[in-house]
Length: 347
Image (cartoon, rainbow, N blue to C red):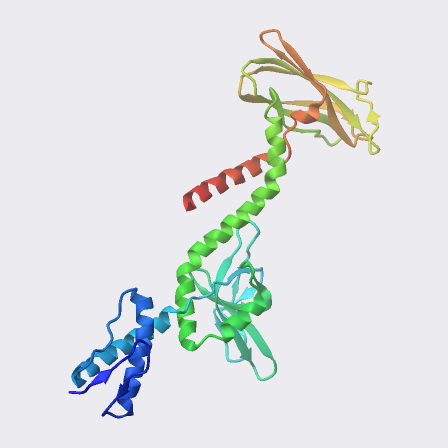
């Protein structure tokens, strides 16, 4: 039997045994410090009259606990990288060249996003080259640092270089394990942020389109087609609850300096009647040919629109611009619907 007395987180002294017992007991006290943090439970330290056998059985467990505590301390920093349209490789040769070429063609609407697994310095004997080791959830690729951009908030290439230079080989392995688990959620987050940027850019178009849709009629599209003689093409949407009988458009042709030009019939404007019926919440289109000669015609505009309903009521619009759906509205609306659907799925 050996008599040992240990204080709380203080050094333990042996009265009769050598220094290895002292070192072991010192490790016990270190573990005493860490164990409550790991298990959040009281830790029972050695009492008096502990046998040598109990010490030898307890120390390996405490060593394992100590190592576990150290491993649990490491948390990987996630660096997200967006690819550019450049050359990527599956390997780096001993001459610091990319091998197994892969050409990515990302675009703004669907960017290629990777997590950064390593920051590699390769020296071919002439000059150093820096490479990213990237993972996208399916494949690992390498590229030069100049071919990709760190997009994580409040992080940049210099910070990545410092972070990876400080990692031990064990920590690098743990970093890879952690970021590979996080890659899909990280990519989804970036995609939503990218889509949100697009929606924000679409906001003006969507707002203008929303204002147009408050009207009883909407001009969804119009043009002035023709090669030798110019006509007028228009699409109209009946946004009311009444049937449209006639839609009469007054149009004017303009030359390069925005002055009106004469029609083939000799007037500076032309009234064209589109014949219905146009049902409520439905659309119609009309094409009127050979209104102007193209020798002086540069562009055209709709001066006014008169709507006659089957119930005999009429309405005339002189500020026609408020009836015209802005370009790109349909596409912006589809992107908004897609964004809302994906966002609701994530949440």
